[in-house]
Amino acid sequence: MDNRKQGIHLMSTPTSTTQLDFSSIDWSPHSFEDPGGRLFWKDGRVFRALRGDSAAAFCRLEDAGLLEEMPKWNIVKTWRSDAQIEGYDLVVEHEALPPSPLVSEWSPRMLRDAALLFLEISTKLAAHGLQLQDSHGWNMMFAGAQVRYIDFSSIIPLSAGENWKPLNEFLNCFLHPLQLIHRQAADYAFFLLGRDNWVPVEATIPRLNSLQFEWMRKRRQREYAKLMAINEQGGPPAAIRLAEMLRNQIQKCPIPRPQTRWSHYAGSFPEPGTQPQPDWNEKQQSVAKILKSLDGGTLLDVGCNTGWYSVLAAQLDLSVVSMDTDRTCIDDLYRHAKQHDLAITPVVGSFFSPAIAHGPRFYDPLEKRFQADHTLMLALAHHLFFKQGYEVSSIVEIAAAVTRKTLVLEYVPGNDYWIEQWNVPHRQSDYAMDVWKRELNRFFPNIESYPSERSHESSDVQRTILVATR
Image (tube, rainbow, N blue to C red):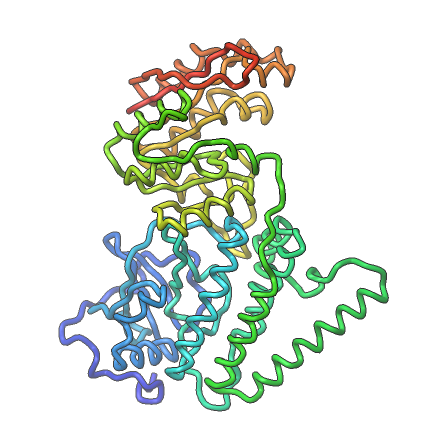
């Protein structure tokens, strides 16, 4: 390869280099089709091999002194490595980020923030004659409630008169899903993103009668024709103008908050804080005491709802991953975590629900991507047992597989007010407290009990919080 043609400055190459054998590298299974670069791990660190236009763009950023500036743009911190790989021009190292939800596991506001970040980065890169050639959420990660752009392979030069490459993909991967979400079809939008990686324009048009549909379709075509005409002008000025127009389009799609079965579940909860308050119930006081006794680290809050206990854990300096299948609840939690700068990563999903499609490639399941020192499962196990048909042994096995140290599980007795409303007495004997303790002891030798709340004002049945430790 002629490095001079690619604009790569060999003088930037470190004087001391480490040659890596291509065949022995732990290449990422999801990084194989980008001609500009490929991701790999070595000794627990994250690297990316670059070549061609991607390597030329990196050198331009390096020479301009922008690498230290880019983390302020919410681009993952990146620097030149001393490694060399045959067939690649240079190798860079990235800051390692914690596990992140995939696009289909985002909430609407997470998608919106990712779209706006893409446009903001595109504007800044265009000012330096650069662009992002890919425009989809698979190149972004959430570190807590902050979105980061991670794919340096996607950064390439943007010359005068050249079309801005990501326009069409941005429409399908960001604008169209947000338009669908605006019509209160969030689950469908994320289903299409997970299954197909994009949302076609036809999906965004309301299914009216055929004449109205055709009128809306032609209106969209006219809007896109304007974008394409600007793109034909080419170069950085066109890219900057397009980014501003797309930003305005997104602003026209405010995120609705649809009412769900669980969206008001925690509406009457008091404010969380590091110290129990007089208006906290017995469950909230017990969980606060348990969280304070933990030795720090990471925590999974499974079935978190809008995240009252996640917020409490984050305020106690735990790094939290919060999961729930209710996208509205996760969206509320994301908004709160972002506003208050809390170490909470929201995820739409559950270890106990069928796998959601994750794009055109294979991605690891939730239980492999998200493991933690401690796991919270509050007001969840009885739903899994009586409504989803899980056996106690299966619930405990899955919980144990993602928990390194402490499992905090709420036991709701079989004569609880709500369980009696479900009228499923035929499974009561398999659900007793001694069954739970026996199954927990297979993985956790130590079990303590704490008082929880009564589930209903008309019932005296007390729930129990079990704290199982390895």
